[in-house]
Length: 216
Image 1 (cartoon, rainbow, N blue to C red):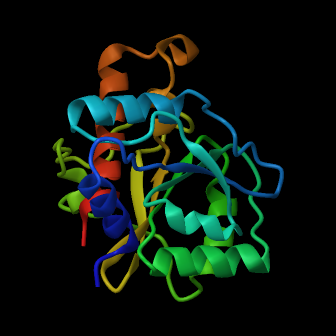
Image 2: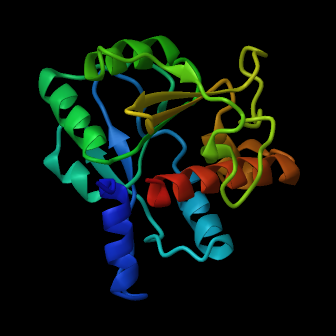
């Protein structure tokens, strides 16, 4: 069965230019700043629409973990710096969404790692995050990343990692760790990254979106 993300994407494309796909930022409890990187997703959407001929609505929506409306989004983005807590309702809803074909991209803005691993274990007790091999399709969409996910910000000076939760071989959750793609997507004035670094972040983000929309 095709994943939910593909069905949403194909339906929007079939309805023409006026029907735009919408993506969302995840609002969660626990005190972490889920609202971080305010300019990141609009800039990524703009890059995707211009360079991959996408048709994503120019602003992201906000969706709570336990909201049934999450099923409307083929791609959900989660970021922040601190604690994350999923309620039982959140866990049940997020699991159903991901098993139905949804896609969650967790982008550690710094300090999320231990909390994300704890809470996602509630969602998928049978799975753990694994290192994605460099030949995984997420690194070879529109743009080619033969060495895996690019390093955008230093943080703890550890190598950048692209981690995933796979269900029946399908990547349902992508965790960009020790790289901070979202900072690279932000307005140039926010972090003043070199343009080549910003482009690497945007290209990797575009790959993730393309993968979420079109993979089987």
